[in-house]
Length: 211
Image (cartoon, rainbow, N blue to C red; front, side):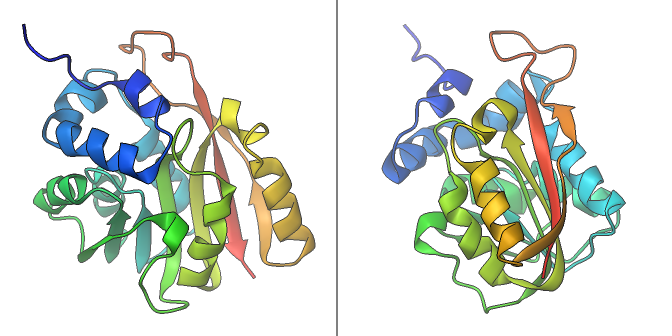
């Protein structure tokens, strides 16, 4: 019997960085076809469009870049240069094949991102801030990598936003004058061909600038 392919339920069940590395090591080569195409995954492209529409410019850091779907969408919109960071070297290897990135950086967001302070004029993230992945404790690492007035576009699973503490975290950042101009458009994560329990899930795109 063939081993069952990884899927969204496996991703949402992740609990540790080691879990993430194991899952995505086995999923990287088939992710684009089996998940992104198979589930009509719209979020990377919508995140890229929201970033560009907000006036986002490069250099951009794509956080939790995975196989590079958001970076590919940014490139198609004329945004660049783009660097990718992800915890999975196998996913980054797939991202490099798309020829959308200047550089790739293997990193656990909870340990920080090994880039110079203020190196990026834009930061995007699609699909990383969700069930079983990364919470708002990673936001300081993203802010450190961003230059003053850098544009952010971070997708956050709508069901996860309040429960995981994102609402409170963004409120603290606004009150502390670390960020400004926060808006939260809500978009569908998947298109009409999606199946399964999560087919109607939505994400909030946190659009803001670093002060």
